[in-house]
Length: 223
View 1: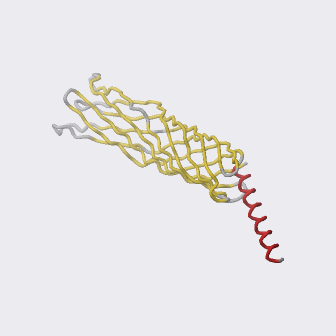
View 2: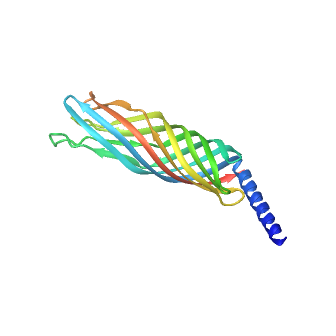
View 3: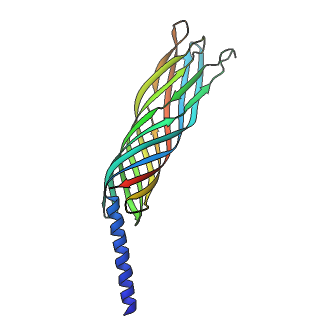
């Protein structure tokens, strides 16, 4: 009899624990996030018979805020989220031309990004949610480039959107506080612009293609 009562109490406690956890994953939330962005930008520059290939890469410090709403149906999670973030740092690359006299260079900055996304997941433990994110990323890119032949610096700025995909996990720490870790990959379309020399001649053509690799850690407040 005691054994039956003990099993019943444990079963009831486990069911209640799971129900409370599921309830906490349902609803709205806001949070803070930060982590490295392993940023890369391929670039190709041409002038007459001259050309330069760049691979500007750097580890940027990414930080931001996010908020969203989600619902847990049995073990499955469906939600939407908006992440607004900023990056500190820039990526630079230098190329030596064939004459060795001029070292053209390019730098790329990504001041801020906006990422709306769907968040889909499953509850694999009473307190742990595994999820994927599917969305788009809108980012501003700023930077500078120098010509292959001649002197001068061209400043450029461009807003671009690209598809993003992410994967992560979130664990409940308390009734209202949760911690998460996630990886988000974004690729952007190629952007072309002209580089003007100090003589005011637009001769060089540059094409850049940025990519983001964000590894973010966040704390959420669940309402």
